[in-house]
Image (tube, rainbow, N blue to C red; front, side, top):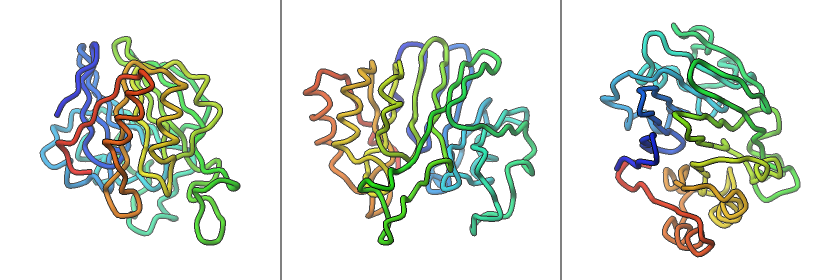
Length: 237
């Protein structure tokens, strides 16, 4: 299912992989892989801009499956291929214009306005491992906001709901709702109500057991707060 909002069409391709296409032709892919790799089969390699939020979602093969030859690839500054067992190709080894980004930046890239946000699990919160360590430590990832043809879309990354999120003005909101490694569906619904976006499309759930959740309950929760919400259930999670 393709979700249409204003001048933008949206496809959720699995886990955190999102494709945005503006009416004027700009195509953005967010976090293409690795769990969404099979869903990228047959993608037209039309991505003008590829956004990679942190090492768990960095996959060189997936980037190649979606990127144009002249694509720009933005990756968080912490991503280090030497620390990722499944890859042996660093971002700078890719045949694209690769730029490192930090959290809490804003910039213009051609016709696109972008910003990044902090993305992490609070060490004192519930999203920690058996040793009490956060699955996503502060400084090792980011969220991305991108404005395409006047529509601001926001993927917060693998993160808790953070106070900084409440300061944002966004049209499209893609919250992770699977819990365990990120905010869960209830926390995401609370954040959606505070953000008051024009449309919510949940992602990052049901790909594997640890992030299984009741997406229908999330929809009811958000809708009951007066926030428009839609499920895209046509693609593998």
